[in-house]
Length: 448
Image 1: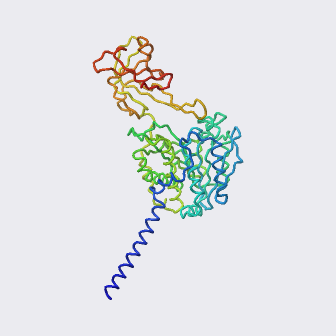
Image 2: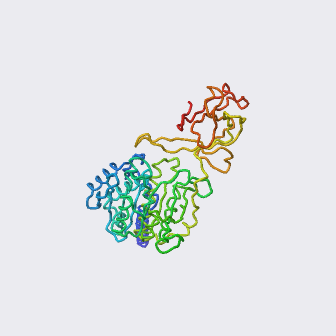
Image 3: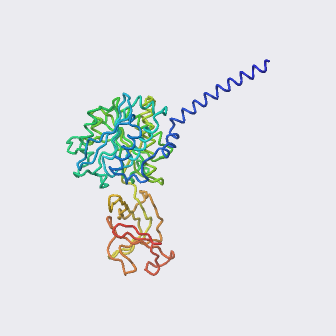
């Protein structure tokens, strides 16, 4: 009988422990970064290439979400861009903490727009989820997913007036800028998320590691002072840094915190909506989709911490310790030790050659890369996103098959022919060279 009682007690305590473990693990699975990371493929509605998003796509997606669950989401299309396209305002949640999130005020920066659509799809499609209910009761989200639809239509930074909306916070010349200011004044959100893309060649400090994400607790004055609002912004950045660590290892930097008086993020903070800037940069091997997923995780994790109050546990010193990003240490492609053979009186010489590529658009949805020589000379202190040991390579400004070189290779050159010697000791003449590829007015063509 005593043994039976012991067995019953052992079973009881084992059962209690099991229930507690299941409860704890279940709760952790709902809020951990890994769980949110795995959630994205299940709820995404964004396209494989966020640069394909246009105003009509965003409008259709939002209308679909509103039809799916009209009680959980409100979408306004009353505001218009300079060319008359809708500037949607999405409201979700019934809580006291108001948070504004705006994306694509630069028309060629769509990564976060895609992430916001995926986030909204998750929130609207899962009204019974415990986490979603908690957020709904504590947060009031004000989402402007595409603030520059005219720029997005052209895949360019500026709006149809040719104005950079992010430098219009004082003059308010643009209808898009006025709309953002009106939303801020109408709702008085406490927190803002200003969502952008930055140059993929931006590096984390002087490490020459490409920055996938740069964060900024946007200052509210030129002196960079701290108050409760900015310290909270630093805590949000610290939380995002720690959240993204496993997915952006060594690729997270701090954005330049110089106060820019005309910029919306800075003025938002000055007006009392303390703002976090998220800049998406180098996509890594995962491509543009990977950065969408990173944004999805960063924003959801921040919202979760703001909703449950755990943001107070974040350490602002983590943010202060981040290396500031730099924009002059990385090239798209570096050829190390290549022989330059120009068509002037200079003898062939060995040096490094840096080439950069930029996006160009042949039509609104057809993107390609256009390259040019960025630097000739010693590039030993720089990094290439692609690097080639080019000791047996020759770079010429013209086709050697058509005769001796013509022209020069200098920064800005968009026509360049690359060859590789058939053998290490081969003389640099056309008969001894194998074509590698060429830049033809900026378009790279690789030889088979």
